[in-house]
Amino acid sequence: MSDEPRDSQRHRTLKGGKIVVNDGFSTFDCTIRNMSEAGAKLVVTSSLPIPNRFELAMHDGRRFSCEVAWRTETDIGVRFL
Image (cartoon, rainbow, N blue to C red; front, side):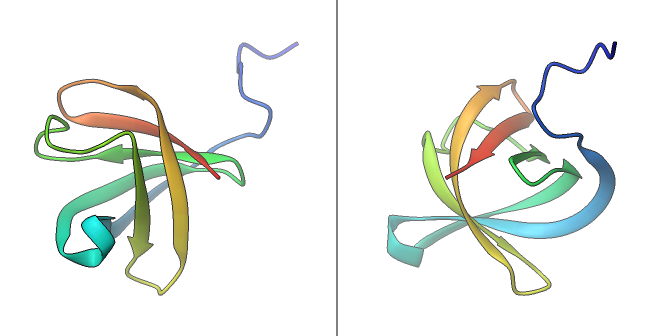
């Protein structure tokens, strides 16, 4: 039995992306540290101005609607909607 509480296993990664809010008028740079089919862990400068729902735009062109599952000062765990 695994200690992993998630439904799908996350895979370590180091990819760039942008958190997109306000219909694209505001963006925040982020680094995707791990990712699964269900969600991801993002690293940001500060999570304070970032709302609980946003779009994640990856530098490879993929886009995901996200909801914050947890956050610290510089990390955000998200579920894909």
